[in-house]
Amino acid sequence: MIFNFDDNKLYYEFFDRHKEKTVVLLHGWGGNHLSLYAILKAFENFNILTLDFWGFGQSDKPKCYYDIYSYSKAVFELIKVLNLNHLTLVGHSFGGRVSIIISAENPEYIDNLILINSAGIKSRSSIKKCLKKFSYKITKSLVRHQLKNSSALKKFASSDYQKLSRDEQIVFNKIINEDLTKYLNFIKAKTLIIWGQKDKDTPLYMARILNKNISNSTLKIIKEGTHFVYLEESKEVIKIIKDFLK
Image 1: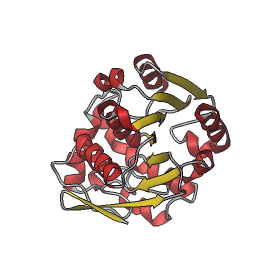
Image 2: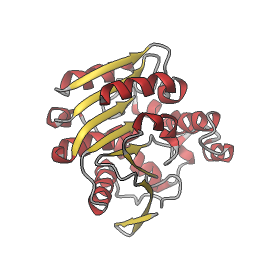
Image 3: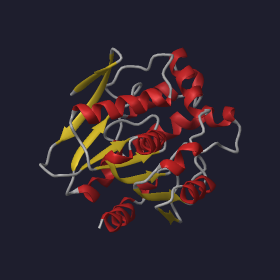
Image 4: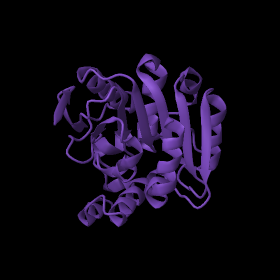
């Protein structure tokens, strides 16, 4: 289905299981609405809302003036249009950024927050290094796990963010430069932080900062996991989430 926001199409799918609670799945940069399907079994008692962020899947490309707050506002407006509450937000990487802002600004809607190798903490690495391979690596992992067609790799064939359109570059730069640490103390939802210990894109120190600053949070570290721990260790991730939701 299509949600129009700021004259831009946002593609989403809503699975109404006639439950009181809804889980919102928010994918990482380079992913799409299918990206988090590997852990769907963790949410058997929830309605499911999943979407394509602007620039990915079946949604329109972002406008040059968009930033992380544009994405967060659009998702929350969709939630209100669908009249959803008692939400569990699940955000991987870029989706974690959106989840952090929504949870901090709208605590009355959010019961649970699940952050999986979330972005949002200022990197100790150079911005240039972060930009160069991030989108390519995410897309490659999704292709490997058959959640995305191999043709998607052509866009990032050189693993160089210069392959993005000019508007996409502008938006990506704004997002990468935004440190969301200031929002963490405002999150009231019960929070689960799942992290792959071998993650080189959002290193483990970021998980510890999240855990320290989000008051009602629990950190679970998966030793062999990387940035895509929810794909590589899906059974363990599902078990951790089910235990948390009990």
